[in-house]
Length: 165
Image (cartoon, rainbow, N blue to C red; front, top):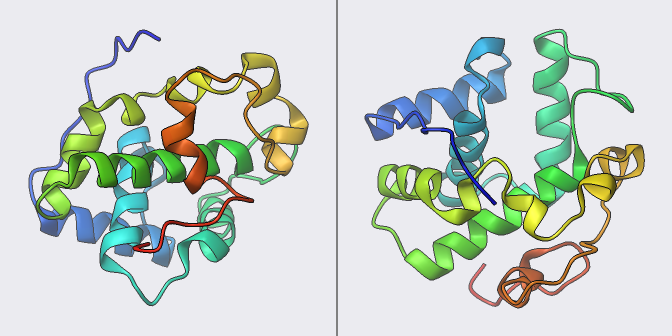
């Protein structure tokens, strides 16, 4: 996988909190809902919002946000179940591997880590499977099995979560 995109880093934990809160409230401008913001909100929810059951609620949270900015959630646009689950698993795998100190370090570290690359899920899912209607609407397990899949598997749907999560 090749990542030619230079990530836009967050400058403060306050900016991360503001992004997360605005996303939850449906007030984050659509143009601000970037790949970086997706990953930042994911880590913010995992690390800072114990009141939210991320695995259970993430789909509804993103669908609600999409509706608030006029993006339909259907077979061709809006919420993508498999990509969301892939990056959620990747974020948890990154946290366990890197053990960053604090939210800002976690987010900015993930943005340059392999798990934060835009095309990272294509290490585990073929393009055809990942971008299928089925994968958008329902979780589809990976159809590729590189060695690093073993590190990711505990965090994917249908697998037990590690005890510390």
